[in-house]
Length: 295
Image (cartoon, rainbow, N blue to C red):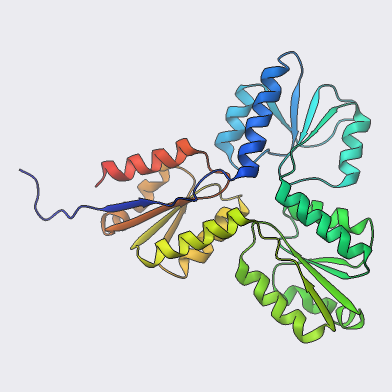
């Protein structure tokens, strides 16, 4: 006889969870390249996406990750969705690789906007994390045209450049595609107080905006939100940061990690699940299946 004290859990999956267009395109194209060129080596400079599970699957197919560019290369070298600097792209060609550029179209737009601002003599502020590969590439592209290019993830990081910004006639802002809108707003607020003319290009991609917006709505009606994805993924960690301000939130990489939160899951009735743009569907399905078995 079933225990009448057990209350059925309400488990919802976000509509915008898992691979975004840019990531899906990069993974599918890399696999297609290898299938069409079985006798050629296929390399990716850096991890194609920030997900160990996917990287292992690609390695099984013979698609290997390069951590640096060799002097002499053979086969195909893929530029990942984060993009690369013109210098790195030239180095890949010089090494002898056949280059395939899988930079996300949204990331390309940020690069082009940063170049445009730099060419027009704006002091360029890139909102994002200095060490993120996408930001490194955006900065490198803009710096070909101007030395007045900086990266900031908070207003505090702009303080050392205050006098430079004040003395510059115009300031232009672009944003890492996976950044939080709150981060952009706080930086714009600070720049407004010290700049004469401010041009803002909100280059947060539509997928990131929709994912964050939907997850916030789900969080408001949930006892617990589970964010699935790599701890190295910027968009996934930003998602978890945003939701923690609304309701109880945990960030896990796979279904096995749910074991660490048994008590919290047991005490939650309304549970929502979302996932980062580099999280494959099978990992999301594993998490949902495990949650449903424990209902």
